[in-house]
Image (cartoon, rainbow, N blue to C red; front, side, top):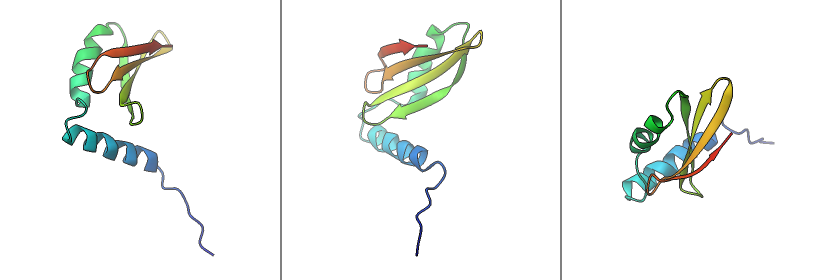
Amino acid sequence: MTVAVPIAGADQISEQGQVRRERRAGNVRSLREIEQMVIPQMSGMQYLGPEYDAAAMAYRLKFIQSGKVFFVDVDARTGRIIGRSR
């Protein structure tokens, strides 16, 4: 009997592959472009990193300030901030 064992990080690998395909097709901006537009707007906050949601075609950038975590959702096609949450 063979048991399928999920590969650690498999979701992240498929997520990265999806964003690469979309980037090559010209459908989304690069993460670097998105970061260059958003990070300067988040003065005083430490940037923790990104996630990409292929279904929504959006990046979620994570920040922290004074022990509180903030999320900024960005349209990957336009670079426009579409949501902020804490």
